[in-house]
Image 1: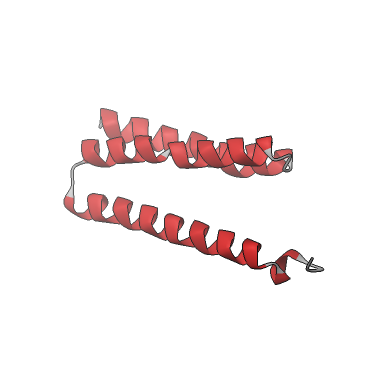
Image 2: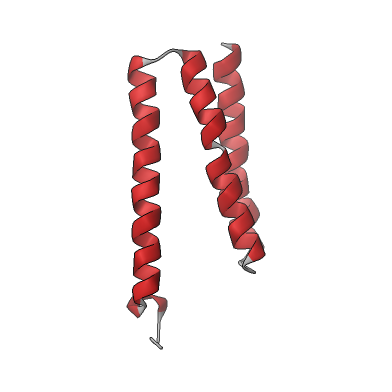
Length: 90
């Protein structure tokens, strides 16, 4: 077993998967922001809010730090939800 997570091949694979997912999600939002309507962007953002909610649940169920569950993923979900609502009512 590796001494640190940075030497762990599974950890590197997980980071690669997360990076690709996050970049793709950002590109989806960018494309809709440039070429779509505020309602379309709001709907996409609302659906994308499931990503940080899912991440929070995964971290919580795996015994991760509460600061990551609520401070990172939970806060991101709340901000995304607020932006979604503002875009949908605009």
